[in-house]
Length: 185
Ligand code: NI
Image (cartoon, rainbow, N blue to C red; front, side):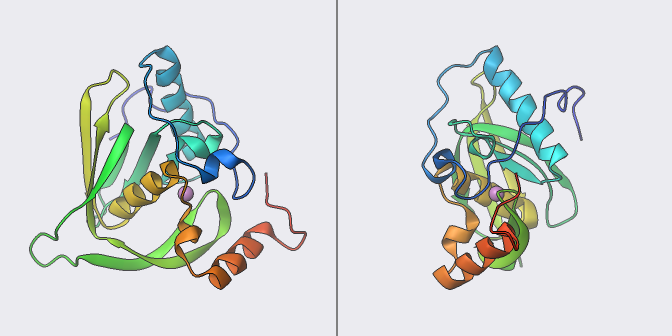
């Protein structure tokens, strides 16, 4: 479900791998719950949508703040839509016959183009607060759980390719950079 007005923000350019140190270091916790925070979250939804992404962390638009947005299907195809400020991630035990982990392809707006297989917890939960500072949680499975783990990684300064062997990472970054060696803007 998309709430009215959620996408009323302004899309900002996406930071690509190596393009800005803010992408490669842990982000600062949010301490001011004001109108600027609300606008930032709206801009993050707009930026994710404009870039055709399923999730976005604040440092991917150059902002040093622990916030992510998500709009991604879970294991049943149900869209998980939301955002969390100051998230903490908890990988969860599988329910019934769910796998503990799933290995599927993962990509990133900050490494545009390639995908690579990566193991992630099949079920995960993120706890944090909303723009008013009220506690919120998102629990998800499958691709949406992968997205939660991917976005919290971003806020810790970790891009998914950083979790891959060095030779594979360099190949993916070269692929993203294209024949001229320049990452797309
Ligand atoms: Ni990403």
